[in-house]
Image 1 (cartoon, one colour):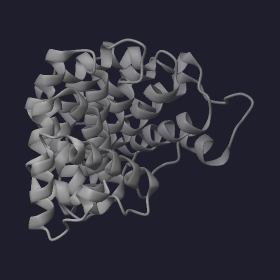
Image 2: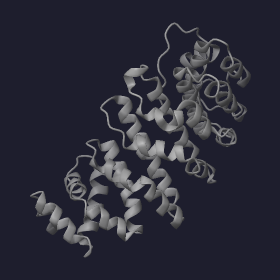
Image 3: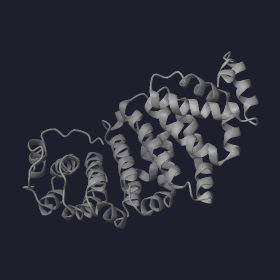
Image 4: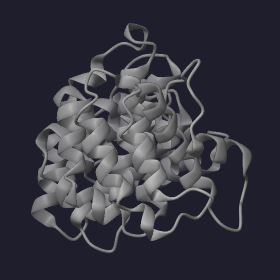
Length: 317
């Protein structure tokens, strides 16, 4: 998660604790302390308290009594400080930390309708993905990256509440897909791509038993997201694209044909078979061999390799 740095900010009790204590036997800070600081009239105090809370949550086991802080982050920061993107980025970092680690925080976030609140008040209904880093020193881009973390951690439950909340918000789905296909060379652009593809893969994996839901998600752009990720010259993105394709292809012959018909994608798979990253190499090899050994898709693979002057790969597959 990323929240933009704050200069000359008063050091709050939550921040002092997060910065100075690695793993205390007990917490000298209470949820009430955090809630009070999050409702402070000075936005700088709010930013530092929310940022410190996110850092604390991933370093120290916080008790379930911190779950109600989720509602305050949504109500007092996301919904009220709409013109302060640094505060919202910090709030989303705090929310991600709580949802990932605190018992009851995920349920509290779903009850607070955190996805709708984030999309509406922090991400301009998804249009925030197109805001350039240079426009506000990366604050809006940080909101995007931290929101993706929140949405991903919402999926990590025994129930399907996170999945339903995500798919039930069309702006959220479009935002996630747009992040996954984001162009740009900045660090934050790269984080959007990785976070977006990661979440798209997560959702696809959850839909494996829902035939209609899976097909709908592919039609909404998930399959295009996987092939786009495959072509990226970034192993972190490419391996996620391969995982998504590995989830989709065994289930749908039409998708296998669609991939095999894409010469650039086939040649990319062939090149990734020689990757130094074992995960990338393994997934790419499995996908390529599946296409090359299927009588219906093998002709497409052969054509793609001929067009790319790499014809020997089919025989060796």
